[in-house]
Image 1 (cartoon, rainbow, N blue to C red):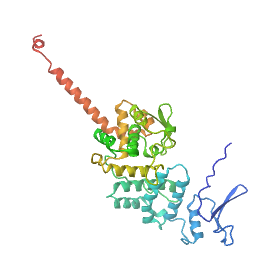
Image 2 (cartoon, rainbow, N blue to C red):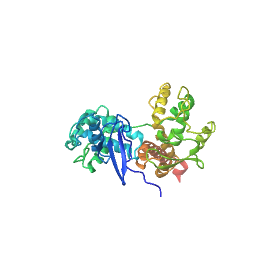
Image 3 (cartoon, one colour):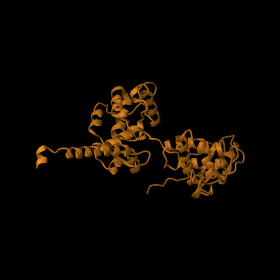
Image 4 (cartoon, rainbow, N blue to C red):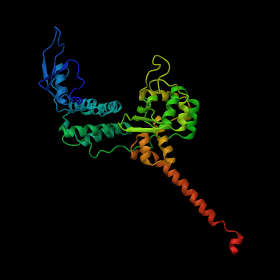
Length: 360
């Protein structure tokens, strides 16, 4: 039977040590352990996922003095440590939450956590009104923190109840045929290859930068989506197969950096997006397009090919509501064209009487 991973085995700061004795875990702080200059041994709380544990470390280090464990900053420390060690949240999401929650730490770090209310969150949202995207990211992070803190009795009420996000704009727009043509004809190298991969698979950037020859299984890509953990099977369409026939078969992902000291190194989603943006800005026809817009483009293409929402979800690893959202404009446009054809057909049938028909 495989040994279960111990939940408490987290990455500990320098000077913090874990000891297992008689089946129980103990933690203590002792800088320089095992040397002639070892400091005093200070016992720590036994739950490294609690705010008390990390405040005790700060006190032992002498960095912050006696920090009350009920401050919002202490609760925030506990939450961030939880999401970093839970193994259920991707690095990209953790990074997004950390950046968003810096706003919260600056606003309420030294205040009692149990004194916070939705009105305080709303006040921050109002202050971010000119940057609705940033505001919505902040609210999303606060909702997750509030849920975690509430069930652990770090706060007495939901911190976000009744707080509404700002209305989204049209979001990432699908690429037009002209934009796709310009990209294929003017982009070169790995950037063009990435656009082709995004366009014909509809996968997320975090998956596209990991995809390689070894992910091919019976005419399609078989992989586990990094963001959701969902198993995805994406068929390789003939257009993509033709492009891939010109790609060198080698170990590793399809998208590797080109030139300079990083030549041959793997891409991260963020770095590939940066390099794409640099290449895009040199092509006037591509002004305003985004890589994520190609995900929308792929979804619309699959819908127009007659696939159901569930089938599209299996191919691109996307939730059904999000697929419906991406297809809303395309579906309305298709329905409108069909209605126009019906109206024209009806009009032609009403006006097709000949003189012989009238006599009859």
